[in-house]
Image (cartoon, rainbow, N blue to C red; front, top):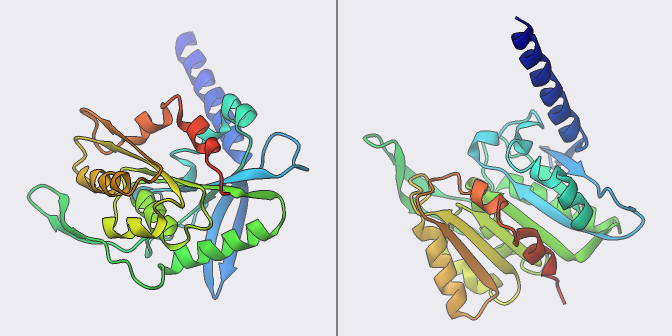
Length: 262
């Protein structure tokens, strides 16, 4: 009984600590043309009188909604690490996509025998999705505030968020110094829009059945051929959760912070 009580107390302490950690991300809602974009925002632990980089993180499909909480489930604690906040001070933005929208356009069919998607298509339309257009407006507002180093704006994301990264850096290569796409995908033809303008690091597990590994491979081959600043990490035996490996990359933040717009 005493052991159970101790375990319960430890669970409560750990849960409270986690909640306190994530509560450091302030809650906001940005509205434009009737579209609401919930987002969480973390300021640098350092002196905010200086200008710091901005990192935008786009979540995957399972974190969609309007609770302004779920988007922190993957990645939220990574940026709260003491080592990250001390060595790589930055503003961190976690927007949340609603259930009825996506960060980037894509089409596919579900194979009901396997449960996985097939026949993927990534139409690159003239205008972004509604929620991504709203995100761009929010970014414009934040960058106009004067607190962010506009030469070091970075965008990262996983799964559908990784698709959003590839869409956004193709649409606005002048805004982003670097992108990180984890188990994402898109139209490789769009690489011509940002090659040589925005650095990119791609991550994928070679056993990913949710979003095929070939998507990242194709992007890498195109960008490498163009002489672009691109890296690709493929993890043997890893399925869709390659973000675990990406967050464990010892060079991840050093590489990201080394990228800068001229």
